[in-house]
Length: 101
Image 1 (cartoon, rainbow, N blue to C red):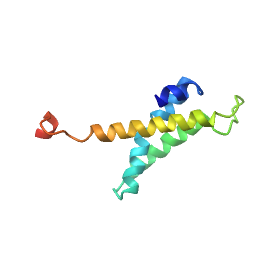
Image 2: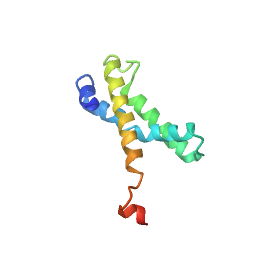
Image 3: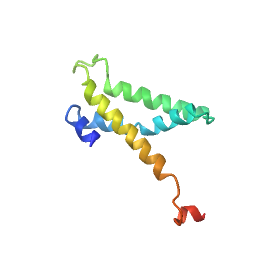
Image 4: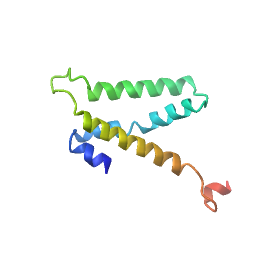
């Protein structure tokens, strides 16, 4: 629902790009919890954030005007929800095939 609200204010590609930055949020969460993060993961996350900033152009220097702040906030909220989905789905449930391996 947050993604569709973001699409009403942003181009579809930009909203998707922000939403699919969810793995970077998982890396940051792990780091905040004290999980050791390898340098290659940090480099990949930094490259991802830089790519999002270059495409989204939050400062409006690309000639097409600044991005809608509410749309960006909605897309970021969708990214947080997607990161939560990834984390919840990674936990094996009792009786599932993954819990038996």
